[in-house]
Length: 436
Image 1: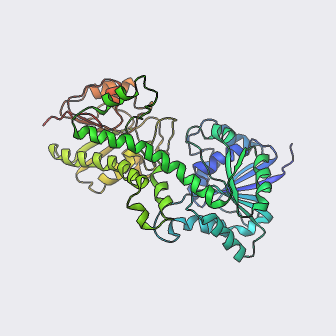
Image 2 (image 1 turned 120 degrees about the vertical axis):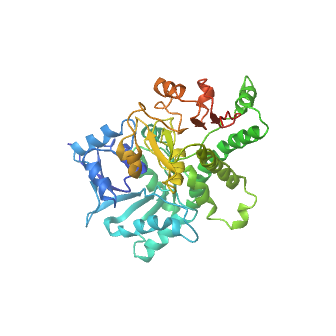
Image 3 (image 1 turned 30 degrees about the horizontal axis):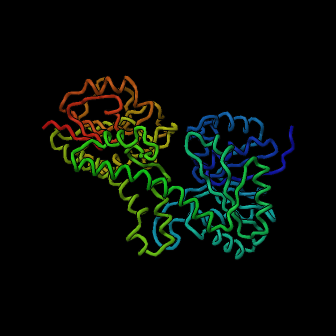
């Protein structure tokens, strides 16, 4: 058996932590412990439920456990590790450091479990300046020996293991003299590395990447709204714009969700005075993308009066994206709408159909799940994403069989892509067809 040279602790057993573990386990000289305060998460992982859908991850984790190199726990007691990777979730919850409290507490709580001269890598998305602040707090706790680095996670759900092998890891350290040591450690773990001059540059770069993507998507969404106002088809405009014209790469319209893009713009602007928001294209872009959810909710609430209470609303697809495939429903188009409608339980009877997801993927929404579309009689149908679970003949046949009084809400343009001509529908970027 290969001798273990490095014992690594990953704090946070969510998507970021689990996929990182899958990557690190490729090095047979490494053992990995995943620490999470959620006992249910640890129990599921110890029962070989990897929680997140990621091609190849199950096999990596199971092999790691069978080789005695992977452990899941909610407590590490007095164990010692060569390095920590902090992968806890962060939220933009307010002024000062409120949204980073979980990260700060976690980074400090286990500092005695890190060996002398050990490495602390922050993988979580943070506001600019947090990595340096953590280093200062550790120094106040007499742990100035710890080398603190920012090495942000930048993978896409569904291709994370592939991207961890291929994408360069941005790395920045508090002490420039230690950056070579940090690089060599990551290279030992199988990463390629690109250096930032300091941690603030690296933190800002991570935030910029997601804010930029969010803003690009919002441009198409705003153009679709303008098209609706003019009573013209945005899809026709899109096709004409992009057809054999190399300088036009306008993306299709549609919801923008998930646990990253929905929050990172807000984390970005927590660093700046509020005056920056007044004329910010980036901040406005986030608000444009949020308008799609409000627009769908308004349509449902306005049209539901046409149906006998409680109005039955069926959601087809719940994950926040479809390509690459994921089982992550956090901040998805469907989840956001459902949670809004749940504030009025007497008015809405909500059901969800998504054969790809398990009950555990839906968390507290699992009671809304139906396993079949047979004998379902909705008043309103919402297309939740454009994944393979939704883009198939079962769904198309179901929609084609709907009574004309049933309202179809399609913000993903599946109606146009597959030429579904339901008589009572609202398709984002198209002229609505409404039956009174």
